[in-house]
Image (cartoon, rainbow, N blue to C red; front, side, top):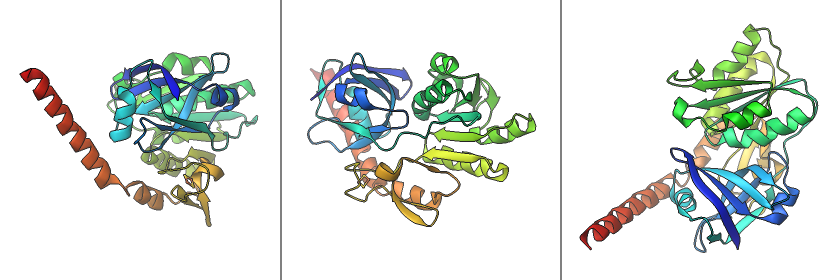
Length: 285
Ligand code: FES
C-alpha cells in the first residue's frame, strides 16, 4: 500500500498528489512515469512523475481530473492508501549538453516538464521554459519553473497572461528573434504535442515528445501502448515515453486514445448520477 501525504487542487481540475514510495523516489529520473490504481477494483493509469524527494521517499504527480480514475484519485484523502504505484517506468529523458533547449509544457505537462528543465539546467544548457494554459488562472508552478530556467515564457489562449495563442507559435517566435534553439522537448496532451511538433518541423529543430497512450502493465507485455514512430512499431512504456515528434504517427495515436471514450463517458455520467443521488439523499436526511 502507498500512503498519500498530499492531495490538493492546485488549479481548477488539476491536483497535486504526493505519495510515499521510497523505492521509486530512490530511483526515478526526469521523464519517467508511474502507474497508479486508485482502489482494488480500479484501472491502472500512467502518470508522469513531476517531482520527488529522495530523503523523504516521496514522489509527486499532477493529475488532470478528466475521467473516472482520475476523479477517484483526486478524491482520495491525505493519510489514506492506494493499492498500486509501479515505477519508475519508461526511459529517462535524454539529458545532455545540447545548448539552448525549449522545454514546453501544457496542462499536466507543465508539471512533468519541470524535472526535465531542472536536469537540463544542471547539465549547463540554456533552458527556456514555456507554459501554456487556456487562461492565466490555469497556470501553476511558475515559481518552480522560473528557478530552473533562464527564461520563462507564458502563453494563454485568451491572452490574460504572456503571449496570446498556442505554444505552436513559439518555435517561430524564437527563430524570428534570432535566438537559435538546439532542441525542443514537449510534455502535455496529444494535441499540444502534435501541434508543437508540426510547428517546429519547418525549422528542422529536433523535437522530443513524451507520448501518453493508454497503458495497462507498463512493462512491454500487453501491447496496449503500441505507437508507430517512423517505420517502426514501438511500445511507449518500454521504448519511450520519449520519441521524435516529427516521426510519430499522430493520427493513429489520436485514434487509439479514443478506444475507450464511450466507456469513460458512461463512467463519468454514472459517477455524476451517483454524486447527484448521494447529494439528494444527504439533503433529504
Ligand atoms: Fe503494456 Fe506498454 S503498457 S506494453
